[in-house]
Amino acid sequence: MELILSSSPAELTLDPACQPELTLRFNLTKLTLDPARQPELTLSPRLAELTPDSTCHPEMTLGPGPAGLTLDPEQQPEETPTPKLAELTLEPVHCRPELLDACADLINEQWPRSRASRLHSLGQSSDAFPLCLMLLSPGHTPQAVPTVVGHARLSRVLDQPHSLLVETVVVARALRGRGFGRRLMESLEVFARARGFRKLHLTTHDKLHFYAHLGYRLSMPVQGLAFTSRRLPAALLSTFSRAPPLRPPCKAPSLPVQAAPRGPKAPPLPPPPPPLPEPLTTSPLPSAASPSESPLGTQYHDLKGCPIFWMEKDI
Image: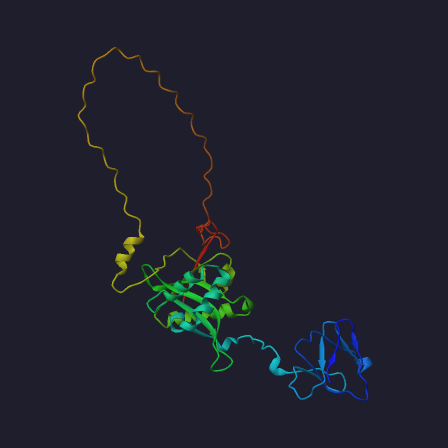
């Protein structure tokens, strides 16, 4: 027997003597039970069909007992559990190419950019630096793909063979403020120290206090190397990064002075202008505070003119 309800009725009352088990199909949008008036079943007008068929596997089952609603666990959406800090691992991007797309999406969520350009940048990661690292949370099963929780990029520093520049530090928005940023930075220190590096440099616009809590201090700017090669010594690379030496201005070749032809006598020249007034003595303008003097001010700015803080930490 099939029972069809139109959209106008709002209530369906069942006889307490015969209460068949009801199977509600997938188009059930709202089910309200009134404990004081059992077994009255109140359905929203959008419910279109009820089928008293107990043989099929229901998505939602209402039993004949007291008010109770049983949901099929197979039909419930799976909730993504919060990653555990102790289970996170740090792995290079070039060692997990299947996670390139997820890593690009994570970075572009913070700094929008062409997807092709972002994937190309991540594809340049190598053990010879620059090196892109991902903070990963393992999957629920051995076959599940890990979740990309964070990302950071490490580059060599010019004229400082034992230093690295940390760039593009980002953590998933839903996980910020829970210790994942600290775990990412601490993992970077362990990674760099295991490879013989002793200092990390970075820049920040608005996370000065966060990095200060991690032990970073204000410092002078450094130059990161976009690429490194064993065939190019550091001395050669440094010549391209420094300004050329100042040269004395070239003197124009002296030409023989020719006597001007005699002509009518020129009019006399006007008298010279009066001397300029003495400049007023004013106090010198205060110089910009150096990073070591004022932790809240900086004399460095990025290409957009925004203040930027250079920081470093011995590891």
